[in-house]
Image 1 (cartoon, one colour):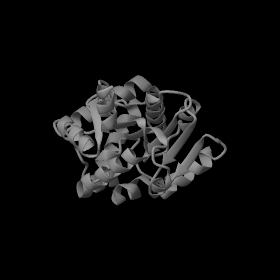
Image 2 (cartoon, one colour):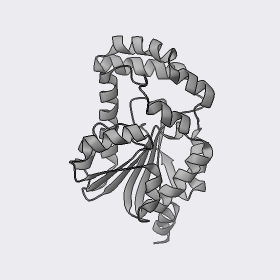
Image 3 (cartoon, rainbow, N blue to C red):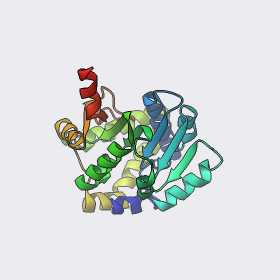
Length: 239
């Protein structure tokens, strides 16, 4: 994950324009809000990135923890949201200091593809510890090994057309193809998981999970999973 952290902490070209970046984070924020069960919820956004619309998410819950590994991004989060008493910014390694069973909703959006299977597995174990017995984990934007790059490109172009930045998207795709992103991707790669494999990983970490009908974000060819403590389902059946 360190190579990807360095990349996202640099002046990268992952977003083709400011409009693309803004609409991406606006949509993610709206999606996260849809998973918040009550205004009193404590929400954790794991590897949140720039989280431009985190204040909107915070308005829908009691407390929002933005956990971000890239120090430069984390500094911008602190500067942006320090006046908001409902938002706290943390490094990933600080999460181990949070109380067990203190989180109502944890989200990991567009994260798993940048982690090794071990890193991802360790993160799931941590999420299991942090979640309340009735808490939920949302793992979103999972890359399917049966879906190639072309659907991602076409989805971006449709999204760009709908949001008014199609020209920027066409230019940006060329720029990205020639940028450090391609180099890092060739060197490190991106992890892809089938639905079966993701459900198995979540089960191994102590969750019972289902695939959501709709993916978080703008790309319907990717997958989102919603997980709970496995014993909750067993307890419900026992009662």
